[in-house]
Length: 69
Image (cartoon, rainbow, N blue to C red):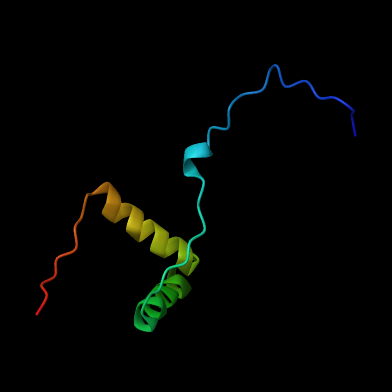
């Protein structure tokens, strides 16, 4: 290992905006089971599927459509 490194020619990380943050979220068991089934069909991990779905909703500015009874 070197005692010093030269970072003068280094570039900023182009993926910095794509970093993920770990959070805790409570989801219904049925919702998790659904995404796990889709995961088995597609080969994409279910947490990635949930993230992709939420990202799609955010990009399309979708709002929940529900009414309190």
